[in-house]
Length: 326
Image 1 (cartoon, helix red, strand yellow):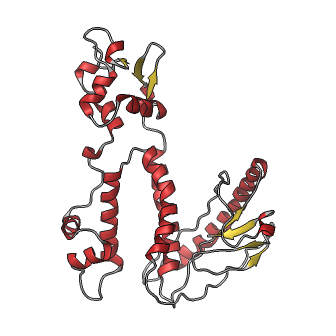
Image 2 (cartoon, rainbow, N blue to C red):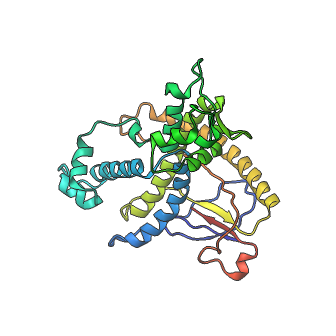
Image 3 (cartoon, helix red, strand yellow):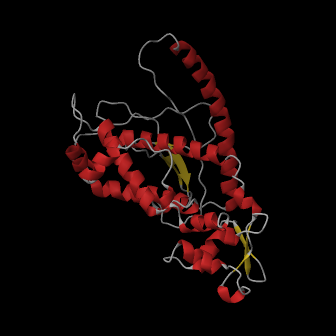
């Protein structure tokens, strides 16, 4: 037997067995009004930030542009969701709600929508590559990037080297650290003769990367928005479906089998949902009321179990833990 957990705190016993019909979703008890719980929110956000940090590091997004993005999100949300009725929020009120300095609030509210991060925030590794492919001293006669000796000592007299290149971009980061990062990214090849060479594949955008980021943003944003809605909605408001199932102490083979089963179940659910959604769209065409956007999704996550069982899992149930949670 398993337990369903979700962001609106409802629980029930539920057997995780193959199902021929969709199970009913438990109704949640209304949330009672009360003071905010910043400590509990901080604990949850800290866990949410872990995969976000992985994404940032993997794609060269550093702290300062991320802080700017966070400030902008806080200001926008304060205006959109926490404004006073029939009044526009003042810079002082937005600053009070968010902790963003009033001068920054004013700047962000007046600034046009930015489509890209400032190139001044470009990470050192990316800036090194940009200089490598644009500075004439680091180019061959045919304008292709030179292979560079890793250090000045390894280079021939008058020949540019990688350490010098990095020093021209930044004095705060060591050349070896930059080289290791570029090798890790697959952008640079470190040859046996001590020379570093840019790979031609480094200049070819990864196919489908823009689309992948688009779906990452829309899927994860809507999922998190549903969970936040369930935590913050008024007591009389309805709760959104936001649940998931988890299992503990599985072998790799069993985890793979569960993933295959999850994909199979999703295929069936997707087909049925799209059939219903098509009818819903047709029936909504002549409705002049406000229009809604709906997203229904699923995810599967498999990772090594490194932490203790979640709260509420007893020693007995841990042996064959099968749980359902948001």
